[in-house]
Length: 459
Image (tube, rainbow, N blue to C red; front, top):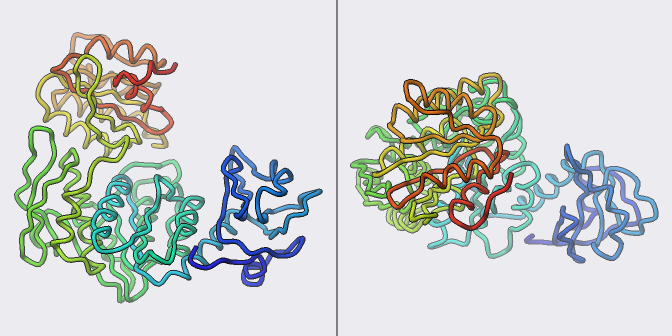
């Protein structure tokens, strides 16, 4: 925090009730396993947890509490509110209001974290950015990023995730961005939205969160670009990025090296600047264009943008190329998955030499069309000439069936990681590339670790 706060300040502004007086604090904690005696503890409630079960034991371990019910036998100062998650956001809002620098916000179905890291590399050359840590991009995580703003920071880079229709609007009301971008829209978390069209509408709220001085960076290559432009708030400036030379910032002469990393010319205001990405996959050119658009809208020069993009290295669990068992190459893309990102992974893998193996864990939260979407990626893997598809989980069976159509081979669908890893290991040699991908719930990082020789995997 830039300035400390008191419970009394919060109660006066947002309501609620003070119990046992007020207290001044400059840190906030939500994890009972990581307590700080100088912090305020916010007792959050989720589907599978309720921190109120533990707050009665926190005397002497924190400065005060934010709770939604009475805590018996506790002498700590308390701000008693209706909803502690809302209170967490309100504290985050006050911290955001203390910040006078530039705020950039990114959302999208995939690639958000990569763009965030690209922006961090670009701005770090001449600024002191505060950046969303890890995947702290929801109603719990974004306020935690705001608590980390200090007086030295002059740029705030926020990643915003959504699982439901109004999540982005809520986060924008707290983060108040000056520059915003939707990277893309794909079938991800469809269960929470109802349709892909609903996802596009929800993601577009990041543009509605801009004021008239703000800039909306629009990915012109996305199917919903025209929809967002048509519904852009009056007065908001727009900057289109994409592969077309009609875009304000575009890419030209894209070439992939033997590892699958892209080199291209970043064309800004008609001037070409060479970029050599250290990230796998042509889809990262699109990520780079969105990052470049956000940075340019924030006043960063094309030269600084290019230098920053050239410095970005891989993010753990996102297309990291690593040495595996028996000399094989393992591409760990296990962090998460949806049909669009799996398609990009298949395209990357198809361009490799030697034997090409895709290992796919079930893609979660796809709604009633989940089986058909798995079938489609299995068919795409077959069409792109992959040598083998190993799937993990019940939905993966549909992908395996589609992949095996017309092939004289048995299905490679598994329900136990130990069996899956054992079967894949038999296929590995120095001429093999194996790419591991799946939704968070599939825990495919355990498979990737096993193929690196770092773990025996788990059932």
